[in-house]
Length: 274
Ligand SMILES: COc1ccc(C(=O)Nc2ccccc2)cc1NC(=O)CCSc1ncnc(N)c1Br
Image 1 (cartoon, helix red, strand yellow):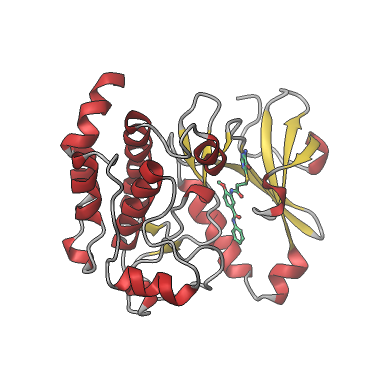
Image 2 (cartoon, protein in one colour):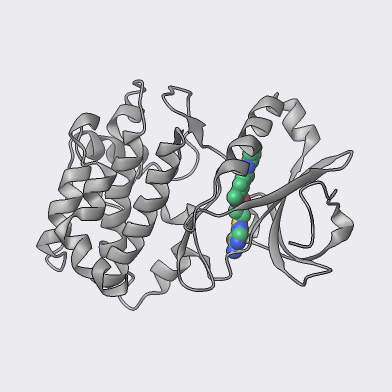
C-alpha cells in the first residue's frame, strides 16, 4: 500500500467525523484518511487516564495483541500513534454499525434462523482464531459486535481481552447476562468462558433477549447458576440442541468451537452460502 510500515501517522492525516457508538466505546469517531479517502474509526485514549489507572503496560500489551490479530470477522486495529496527551487507535470502520441495533430493529426483534446460523458461524470462527492465539475475548455480546458494509460480523471492542488462562477480576460493568457460572463464582476460568457466551449469544439471536435476563443482579445470577432457561416454541429443535451443548455449568462439558461449526443446525445453512 501507499504507506510503508515505517510511515509516521499523525492526527493531521485524518479528517475527523461524527462520534460513533455515542460514547459507549469511549471517544470513537469516524474519520477519513485524507490522501486515500479511506474511512476508519479512531479511538482516542487519554494518557492521563491511563497513567492514573496505572494501565500503561495493559494498554501496550492490548495494542500488541491487537496488532497481530488479522481475521475477516474481527475488527482490525489498522495502526496507532500518540501525541503528548493522547493515544490514537485507528481501527477498521464497520459501516453497518452495531449488531445490537440490527437485532432490535429486526421484524420480530429477533433474527431469522438462517441469519442467526450465519452470524453464529462467523462469531465462532473469530473466537476460534482468538483462542488459537491464546486470547480469551470474555466479552462476547451483541453490543461488542459490529456489522461490516457487506453484512459480515466483526468482533470489536477489545478493551477486556486477556491472555489465557486468567482469573483477573472483570469489573461487573455492563450486562451480567453473559457471565458464565465460573466467573460468577470467581473461579479460575479458561477459554471455555467464550463457549458459554456463544450459547447465550445464539439464544439472544433467536429469541431477541438473553436466556437468564431478570430484574436485578441476584435473580440473573441465580438463574445462571441454576441453568434456569426456557425456549419459546418458535426456537428450532436443532438450535435448542446446540445451545444446550454450550450452556453447560461445567466448562469441560461445553461443545468445542469446531463441533459448533460442524453442528447439523449450523451446517444446514452454512453450505448454502459457501
Ligand atoms: C480493533 O478494535 C479495537 C481495538 C482496541 C480497542 C480498545 O479499546 N483497546 C484498549 C482500550 C483500553 C485499554 C487498552 C486497550 C477498541 C477497539 N474497537 C473499538 O473500540 C470499536 C469502536 S466503535 C466502532 N468501530 C468501528 N466501526 C464502528 N461502526 C464502530 Br460503532
